[in-house]
Length: 94
Image (cartoon, rainbow, N blue to C red; front, side, top):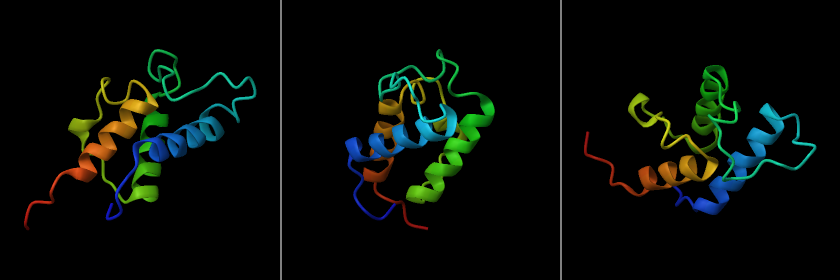
């Protein structure tokens, strides 16, 4: 994640991916970045793994297990916020 992440752009990309991959295009147009992902049954354990893989492929970010929690993954906004916050943190020296 070398480029600066913009939260609304990350949110839009995540929303589009979830619509296409998990909601068959969301024909009713009911899904948005504040829709509950866990309570709504959108993020199952398999879908969460698929989403984490997408995040890695799209932004090169590895989401540590400790960051995969119901607070961060409650909505697309929460995920986008978590990713952008992680991108702003300085990288510790190796």
